[in-house]
Length: 221
Image (cartoon, rainbow, N blue to C red; front, side, top):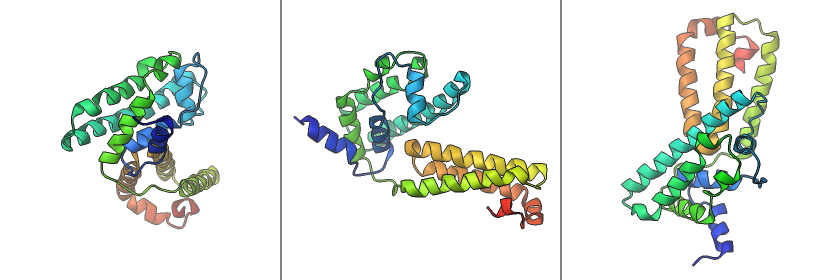
């Protein structure tokens, strides 16, 4: 049997970067909360959701939980393809699935925490060891630099002389990038690639207008 120290060594030092290891790292980073804390507030703090309107906050948190649920489905699919017995991981995946339920957002945190046991994390950590390494993790300083550049771009829009269509395009691309950055700890680099593909498609649609305003600082940024 593993002792507590060995359990947390496994959990905190993922060998591979894949859906299982990302979820373990993210869930293990949830800070301690009093049992009577509303679950919505716990997830909002984890995902750094600053929205004050409770309905909008719940919507954003729901989107992040949906992204985590999709990663759980990937774990199931990939473990089945690896031909490992479901008895080794299915119950732990199901417990995390219950913890991620948006139906529990109004509930108190203790109703969620009961599903996030050390045994659950150990089982998911072994899944992370079994599943292949998908990518190289992006350094947090690089992600912070992207966020800083986004703030510069956003500030430049305040005095922008771009036509409305291009102004809206830049604003949408800012949203795409920020959403991808928020989803990155959950889903990895694929969300950055998806955002890039969407942005590229939109740029192609208005390439003539962009060429006309290519000297504008916002377009350069």
